Length: 342
Image 1 (tube, rainbow, N blue to C red):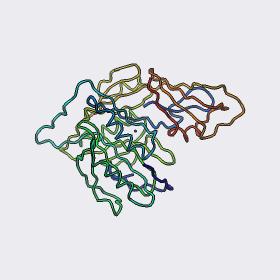
Image 2 (image 1 turned 180 degrees about the horizontal axis):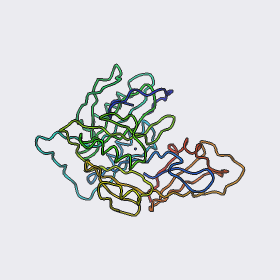
Image 3 (image 1 turned 45 degrees about the horizontal axis):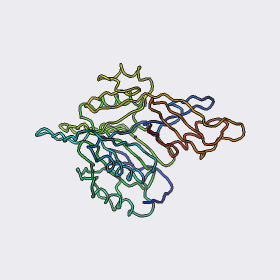
Image 4 (image 1 turned 120 degrees about the horizontal axis):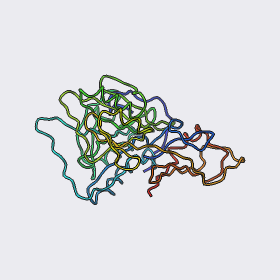
């Protein structure tokens, strides 16, 4: 399906995970062949691994890709793999109000009418999607949309999904973690440590971390505090992955044990027991062609960014350039990245 694009303005108001409108790529320095994670925003700083039962991965990956294609077809923030043995979902204890701890909310731009959003919403009514629950939405609501937000799920143990239309501002991909009421403040500090940035739009029960931004798109990570007595249920078939620098310096600062599970990848938990993968970033600039002092760098030159099985990042140029400027790279990074699966 094709959507028309329109001009951008200011975003609508923000409150909770649904009220408003992110594994292997990073930045570059201007005068050398070394990348720096601080120089260029990383659209894949946060990603999600989903583990499906045998025979289900292709269907789930297609359903997710169909949604994200409305924002950009190359925005591959979710990877679905399969476990060897089917897993039965865990049951909640009696008398406990619980919900999946992880949600993904897409704020999609509309141009002139509501038909595309309603069409996409209808796709949630068909397999492999299943209705999960409805939340009341506070803030600006469009006339044809109800004052509530429906959440859907692919399979038990995976994130919740929802869509909201925006008439102003950018399109947004927002990862939201629901936190225990008593752990919210500590969880904010925990993810500030992981992401190495302060929370924005912070309120008593909600905050947002900017992950990546360009002229059309924001990728965000947010925390939502649940009422007392509500228990977030870790997603047993999905795990968030964060790309981090200086993993050796980070590990001693974490509240829970953090252990290596493969070369360059570590596993830990947050305060509510959500499992996280931490991927150590090692970057290099690999040049396919010789550098010549004949062509300036122009946004739109064909770049391809690859990762190998050691977590080494290589950016290949299909044409010669003089040198790389971070401001130029950041403008084309998210639309020109392609995954490499060795």
